[in-house]
Length: 80
Picture: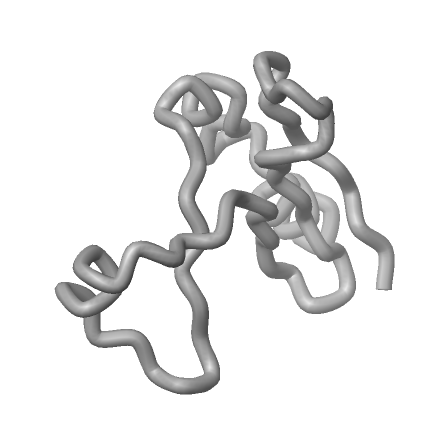
């Protein structure tokens, strides 16, 4: 497994999270964020036992790669 760090919240007080990664083996994205522990918020979402919810600030969205520049798109272009 090779993880590629795509972006990290530059305003994070501890410089560690939230962070977006791309796994070039599974061809999927991983989002490191803040654990949601508010029971009222969690109760309003149907979350299967094998899943979890993480939170990240809206400011991180501007750092996400656009679909045309995303790693999964580049990998598809290289295979074609």
